[in-house]
Image 1 (cartoon, helix red, strand yellow):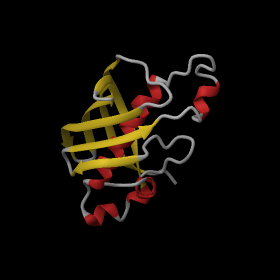
Image 2: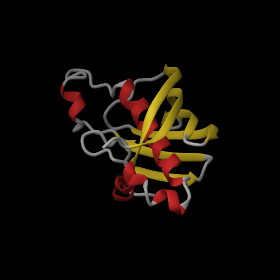
Image 3: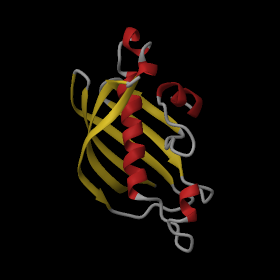
Image 4: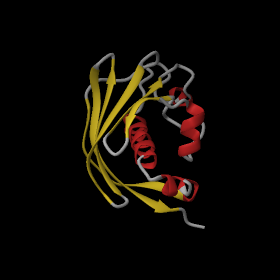
Length: 150
């Protein structure tokens, strides 16, 4: 299990764009489960939509991607992990994205990702998001770990 402080040691994201509160379970190179508590205090609800707040689908996809980044970085060897501050994860593609149920304030958004394929610095992940065990969104994510540009 990783708390938000540990997640910040892995990912470069910070408020208001760190979209994972906690990692519940992780099995290196195979699987990750993480979550974000969606509160009415999220800045995005000021404009999306003030009278009918809905958590944006692109944020759900980004949250899945961040969980995938934690999985990828955590799966590196100890030697490689020492250099994660010099690395970043880039999206290559988002395929088969489907949004099934709106996510609203008060929901606990659970991200579950499993590795479809991993070769070198390229990862293909099956991502699913749930609220109360109900599938709310899914996508296939392809990403690459690269060196940060100076």
